[in-house]
Image 1 (cartoon, rainbow, N blue to C red):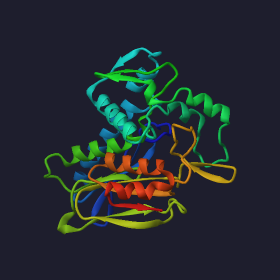
Image 2: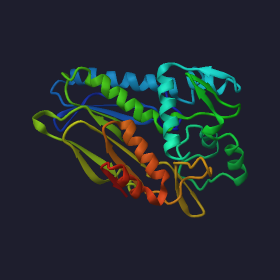
Image 3: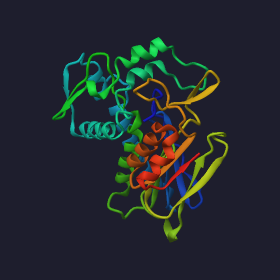
Image 4: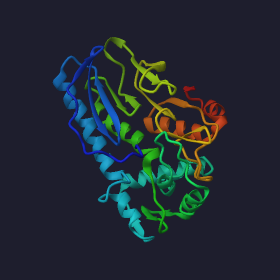
Length: 306
């Protein structure tokens, strides 16, 4: 889920015929989204896209940290009191806690305080050491109490589902679109993280262009063909970065230092069975910095690094 403030929901674009499929675009979670439906019927494509869009907007409403009417706001405004959460929220928190353990604390959903001091908009604008230190006083999953669907977050701390929310939304939308498997093959793409429900008609692959981080929006660094269902996720600094002392710093923060990870690749793409798994692995690879390739090779997944 993007860290940018969400804009009011706009109507989806009109279906566009593209290489034998119909494409419908919309904005959700602060990023451009697109659903490609392998059908000759544009009305069918619009129905499929509306299912995916509705689910994306539902998840945004529920888990965005910029709203004042959802579970995240309720946790942040509890003043350190315990908050009981529903099953869906609990499942995401359980997943985040597992990622925290397996990454030795590098993956941490309590980085909300750090997100207040870092703004990744391409400017020369690193926060002061004092501001980072003040934020770090409110970061650390080890400070949180979590058991039996009840979360106790110390006063001043924030959770941020940005590292897993968008990928979770892709998986959920794709599952709803796929339904019983009788519908058309569909590619659900939210901000470059995507799932193909299954292969296209006549055995044709889904061809995915991976953006060149040196030329965002202009060129693909390489193309990946999905011959069946699968998920791709990409992390990198093509669009979200700052510069400091002449160095380009990507948006993935190390919660142990308060600074963006040093030595991380410009772009990491992973192919996995779910978008959540793929996205988690790209994030963990970036958190590994110069050891990103070594980390992904140890996981035994297909990956591409720039």
